[in-house]
Length: 582
Image (cartoon, one colour):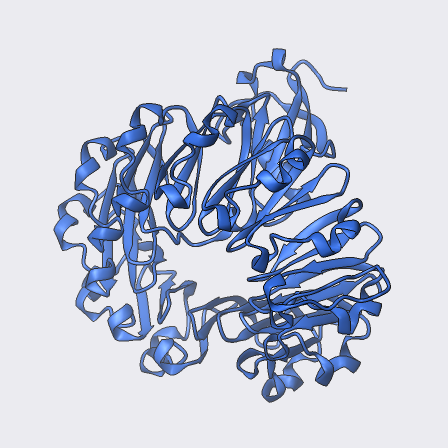
């Protein structure tokens, strides 16, 4: 029973499933509701809505309008929206007043002048490679950027009301509305045209997943609707009868989808252009390019029941069953063939992690089994160290690393560049391995990495380690930030380091920013140096540029001008009130 100083709320998904409920002290902020929601799906980001109004994490609970009810809607953001590094060639900044400022390549979202009057009350911005879509507090959507890539939504504008989530493919968008209907726009071949399945998208949709060129929507009744490029999973007609009910999760690889059903069976589909092969038992039907996971016929009898989780990398899938067995399919050189380690995957698997072309399974006894491309799939050289006590596995593009719980090596964090790893040990030491030219060889700075390291940040080819005394140690490709000697006297009192693809930016305790690495990719901030002498609280980067938010809400940018490093065209709009940059 809630007291007068408490407020009772229910956090409910679009499907009607109650994520959390209880009484919260009215003096708290709504970030307590966000924390409760995320406990249900660790690692996933979400939005909370009261009616169609966005609830920000900073809103006092007491400020919520209880006349709208105590049911709070939880909208889960797709993994691509929540986790991806910006792949756009522009930036979009949300200000505290709900306005948006953009810069970068004009044709890819850097110029939003045509829709500027509409960019008010914005609560979320979603971007693909060519355009942006902003959700406003009233549930309307504003788009800009490359018209064919989703920047022009005029054809569906009357339908874009009551929107609670936007998901992207490479060149299109799909919006879920509060009534469970879906609206799509952008490149028709990439999922922007859903007219062929429109009658199925008028109600009941609870989640949409996008890959490079297709979408898959789960409905409240457990059915799945797909559209977009047939070669990427947009055509699921061959398995349509198996997708009419019971689907609880959809997972994608680069060009295929896999759906887990409530009975533990799996349905997969993918590149229909490259032919078809389906099993005859009706439980798992697959077709298309086997090298991308669309053909699971070879393991179909193993996927008829008991599957509890499916993991995908760029070219294959791995499924964990309730009995701890692991089943794999797809490109045999990318992890789809686990025959060599099959006796070790018959029981006890509790988690699977992948890099681009290999998998690693953690078993209940703490051992690890790996397979796939030899870069990450062959762990024979360290096999004796992977027999027990592993609690986490981390992957980069080409390799895998495991953290153990037994304290034998005392690793507490692992960070990756594109081709190397750096591990922080409990005593503050750092150990590195992998491609020497990408940070795998830290021997040149080894004496500086023997103690006191509290954070390691990696970009594509180098690492930067922050020590407890505020100093920074760098190694790896010198051109991309592995050599910080030119700014070494300035790297004191550092509290945070951010990397983009080719450079680093460090924030100091006094709010100053220091940069190094590829000058054209953000390593040279001399042009804006007077603006970076104090007050910086956050730095974010895309591939070749940086944007720093200052305590007064101002934004300072540098790096490749065409990719957002030059924000002079919108400078007056970036002088105050910025709360987020994406």
